[in-house]
Every structure is written in C-alpha cells, then in structure tokens.
Image (cartoon, rainbow, N blue to C red; front, side, top):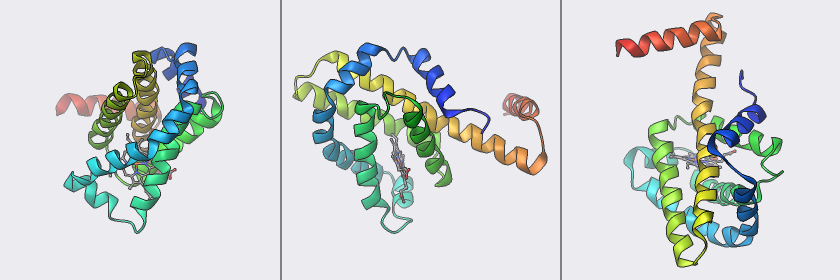
Amino acid sequence: MSIDAQTLLIALKTRTGFSADHQALLKENTDWALALAPDMANHFYEYLGRDPEMNSVLNKKEGSMHRLHSTFVQWFHEMFTGMDNWGEAYAERRWRVGLVHVQIGIGPQHVVPAMAIVVQEFGKRLLQAEKPEALREALGTIAMIDLAFIEQAYMEVAYNAVQKETGWTEGLFKRLVSTGASTL
Ligand code: HEM
C-alpha cells in the first residue's frame, strides 16, 4: 500500500476537523452507543437486505449475516471508544474494513448510501434519547473518516494490482486514470 493507514487517519482528522471536543463527546456516550448498537445493526442489515444487489452479496457466503451483525456492533462501538484514542490501531482496523469490502466487491455506490443510512438512523435515535445535537456532528465526522478509508482502499488496491501486473509507477497509473476520465 502506498498510503500508510496512520498517515491517512491523521490527514482525515485534519480535513474533517475531528476535534478533541468531538472525541470527548463520543467517549462520554460509549455505553449508550453499545446499548444502541444491536438495534442499529438490525436496521442496517434490513436496509441492505431490501436492495437486490446487496442482498445477494450478503447471502453469498454461509454465515455472513450472523458475522456481520456482531462485526457491525463492534465497528459502531469503536467509533465511540476510539480504540486507542483514534490512533494507529484504529487506523489499521479501518483499513482492514476497507480491504474486506474491496474483496467482496462492494463499491462506492453501495458503501456511501449505506453510511448515510447509519448517520440518518443515528440522528433519529439521538433525538429520541434527547442527546445533544453536537453528538450528531461528532458521529457524522468519524463516520465520514471511516467511509474515506473504505473508498481509499479501492484506489490503493486498484493501483497495487495494476502495478504488480505491469510494473507501472503510481504517477503513470494516475495519469492514465486522468486521461481515461476525460474520454468517458
Ligand atoms: C457503512 C458502511 C459499512 C460498514 C461500516 C460496514 C462494516 C463492516 C465490518 C466492520 C465488517 C467486518 C470486517 C472484517 O471482517 O474485518 C464488514 C464485512 C462485510 N460487509 Fe460491510 N459494512 C458496510 C457496508 C456494507 C455494504 C453496503 C455491504 C453490502 C452487502 C456489506 C457487506 C459486507 C460483507 C458481505 C462482509 C463480510 C462478512 C463475512 O462474511 O464475514 N457491507 N462490514
């Protein structure tokens, strides 16, 4: 990988303005988030199941649905705990999640709306629980960081695969992509 996960996380924190206040607020709500997580997971996988394309991915591998429920709960909870204060372990974990989705062929057109559903549903739960509006911003910010990891994984995997096959440099690869985009 030409991008280091930790370096990417640092850049994304700066770009999104993921602040100490956001982090403190998320940590304060860790227990509430953990209690909420199974319900969020149900809502999320019901949503995926209503889409024929995503439903077929979910049902491709034996036991995926069961594993996904618990991995979602863990993922959701980690946004609040920050694992190691949103440090190296957090970055490595998010990178891994990105790679898993590239491997199973889940593209940006699936992941971006799915993250929107998480943020939307969280907003509703937050209102019901009378939690502060600032918590929505904090969750929305870390969710966008997580999303950027998944998106970036596509680019990195594509580049690495092409590089392995052809020996092209990253610069040449990017130039070809830019040229290709202008002909579409
Ligand atoms: C907000 C976006 C998403 C998040 C946060 C998310 C979260 C996760 C996590 C944490 C894992 C476990 C990764 C690991 O094993 O290390 C996972 C795996 C997986 N996700 Fe997602 N996911 C998202 C979107 C999607 C979408 C749109 C699909 C479409 C069907 C999907 C299908 C899967 C599948 C099939 C696996 C592998 C399950 C297995 O067999 O173990 N995910 N996801």
